[in-house]
Length: 162
Image 1 (cartoon, helix red, strand yellow):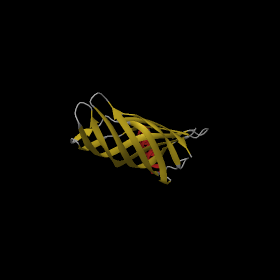
Image 2 (cartoon, rainbow, N blue to C red; image 1 turned 120 degrees about the vertical axis):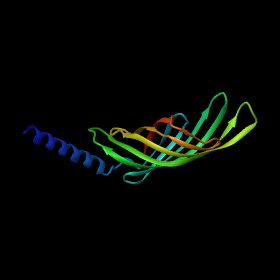
Image 3 (cartoon, rainbow, N blue to C red; image 1 turned 90 degrees about the vertical axis):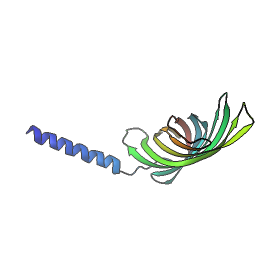
Image 4 (tube, one colour; image 1 turned 30 degrees about the vertical axis):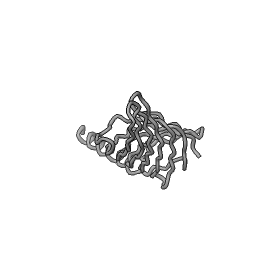
């Protein structure tokens, strides 16, 4: 009897997980614009081109003692719903690329910044206000000026939806 209950529980859990993964996400907003805080901070615009597919555009800036950098990132994202009682929550993944430049402060040197980017994150739209929050991890394979894998890019975006 216990084995039958365990098998039914496991089968039910697999079916529920399948429904969660296969259900199409539908955003409660079409466009959102705001700020992104993280490794590169700046402005951010997201637009849904299909109910569960979005373009995320980021103009980011970074400055430290060695250099200042600016880069434009474009990402294609696929959103998947997570059931919540208030608002809309989804997890998303995708990829894209970045192009920009680095200006070194100690030397008279500028370099092209180029990378292939991935993204994995959570997107939450408040139901009571036109506010959208997202938190993501955006690893990048930097192609220029030096080839390296940058896995330490995390960001928090706060946007107004319309």
